[in-house]
Image (cartoon, rainbow, N blue to C red; front, side):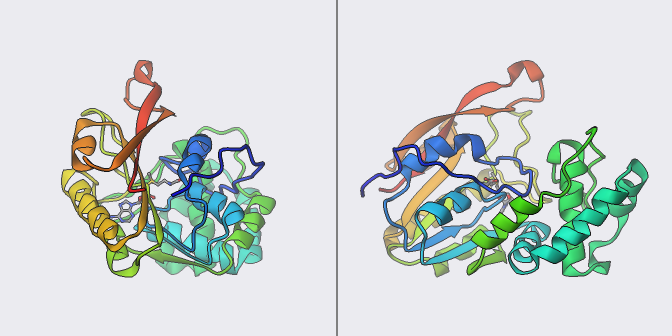
Length: 282
Ligand SMILES: C[S@@+](CC[C@H](N)C(=O)[O-])C[C@H]1O[C@@H](n2cnc3c(N)ncnc32)[C@H](O)[C@@H]1O
């Protein structure tokens, strides 16, 4: 397998959502591991989709399937793809009305009472105005992050949304568990896995995007899926944290290291550059 994209290509990634574990600052390092050609591209932990947007622009796969377990995130991708102008109008209204009182009113609105466009606008409005762009829900699945302290949060960027919408044309986006990939991907398909990272320490709290934490059992299940896809002849790339546990799970595969700036600990003194793994089967 030939490695491409060593050269600097100008690109813009239309990141429309703030997402924990977003890959923007790692893209320069990750793109060198991509294969030269991708026919079918799968990203089963898509989050803000940084690598997808790059791959769509530069490798133009014939078929793309993105998925994630967060239903509201997936709905937003679908609305950006199918109804971007309506979404921009709805977000513009949120921007006009934004205040502390308004934030908490929108936060407590039941998404099920809204249209799909209304749900996407609510999700993106809260994402841009909440504390640190965190996505956290309570045991009933209700978003519960307090408002952030931004003087002038950028609630709607029409150009970014339109650019993302254009790149999402003909892309399938689905809410589903990563494990469903095993029955769908076949020989020659490319899969990029970027799971919630295995924690580096007891206090690191990367895994709590959803009600279901992604700990040892899930990491082992992911490793089983990775091995099954490897046996099928898929091309596999995975980001994960640099821990003995993850290294031992993927023993025998090619393991590369990249450097990332990350908040790895609740103690601000322990924030800084850390190593992350890129696990490849080619
Ligand atoms: C590290 S983030 C991905 C970040 C992404 N690469 C980006 O650039 O923003 C991990 C993602 O996995 C999703 N996730 C967590 N558990 C999942 C599961 N069991 N199946 C599918 N997606 C899951 C989370 O909702 C989150 O979006």
